[in-house]
Amino acid sequence: MQYGGKQRLCYIPGLGGQPFKIVFRGGLAWIEALRLSKVPWLVHAFSTRQGGRSHSPCAGLNLGSSGWDRRELVELNRRRSLRQLDAADFVLASLRQIHSSHAYMLARDGAGQLCYQPSGVALTEQAPTSPPAGDGLLTAEAGILLTVRIADCLPVLLVDAHRRVVAAVHAGWRGALARVIEKAVGDMHRVFGSHPGQLMAALGPSIRACCYEVGEEVVEAFHGQFVRADQFFRTPPHRPEAATQRRSIPFLGAYPPGHAPQQGPAAHLDLVAVALDQLARAGVKLSNALIADYCTACRTDLFFSHRKEGERTGRQMAVVGIRPGKRGSPTNTNPQASPLGRGCPRYEGR
Ligand SMILES: [Zn+2]
Image (cartoon, rainbow, N blue to C red; front, top):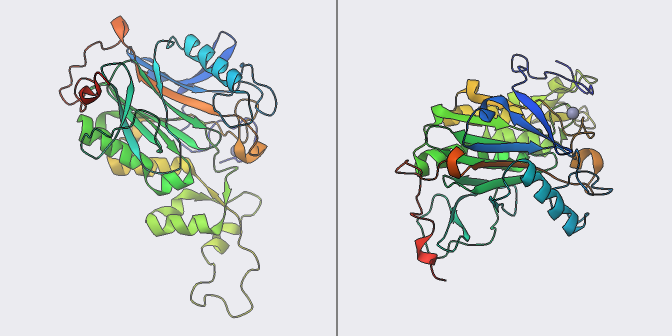
């Protein structure tokens, strides 16, 4: 296992099959999962910062409104990206990301307006039509592009190729702690009838264990929630004693008074390991978990990184959707695929 190198190829032994490709088109570059690229009705991508019109500190293809870029440039970047993805006609769905486990089902009403229906609650007339706060999006309706914005957090795209259902998840450490990935898989099963064993999960670029140093409060929070939490943390290579020390941190007098370490050693969180644990717990086959082996903090030539570059940086976008028309599914035959009925009928005419 190697850490910190610019060109790491595989940092999870046995999972380095490079199941992703970088697609260059129209001056832009994005990453696709090879297996998902073979699904004819699917559009999906993890953007890079290559191309784009934004300037420093968001130089490149900034697709998120971080406040450090001009709004018109972000919109221009988005339009160019959608055009190159052949998804210019899609309606974009996004959330105000808050590092939670809240997920929403997306559908359109009779006027084509997006409806955000909280998953897990009965349909109400209060379903918001503007982006609510949350970190998971699901849909079975063609023509809706689910998007999450990231600059270190882990984007996870879930695809049910059998029932034509897709989901996009934004998983930072707080969302992962709240089991946002596990819950999204559960929502796909409960709402759309997706069988977890048939789902494919694409884990996009994020900050990886090589660079993701976290505080003791994060370590303790995960140990309080996950029995396998020890497997979520990596020891930095230059401090091989750290793992032993970390798990020996004074607790109920483990050290004699005055002999405790002055400062806790660094722990590095492995978001991918957390995601894989949640996928497995939810019933997803790990052979169907596709991992893009890119660390955003190591590869700021390709990606924006909040940890590496600071708050004043841009955002990548991960997108997934069902293509309408001849390549897609004009009529979804899944009887459970439209929990909102035909769009949001209660909103028709409003
Ligand atoms: Zn790294």
